[in-house]
Length: 120
Image (cartoon, rainbow, N blue to C red; front, side, top):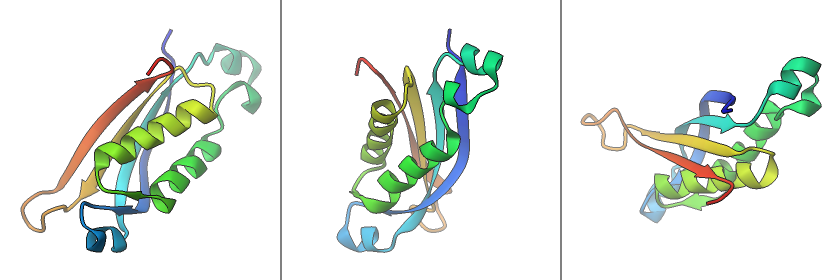
């Protein structure tokens, strides 16, 4: 069974970029999360304790993205995925990271999609 919790369209200012100057600019990144977990108990009980609290996930993502420096979007995605797996009862998580306008006028955004499981 692969029920999935979706958090889409998260925007967080992040210290992200290969150069120190780029990381100091703290430009927004766009994040989507797909958190896999059996949600049958939550569906039956209608209680927050039987699922993953979305606001807590957002707070964790904001902390990782906003309070750490990342040179690569790959590193940011991996760090978020591992943090979600460590803190919440997820079986797997997929994190999509998009960096808007990385090259002015030429490219809309770059991105990665990182999937990690408890076994990774």
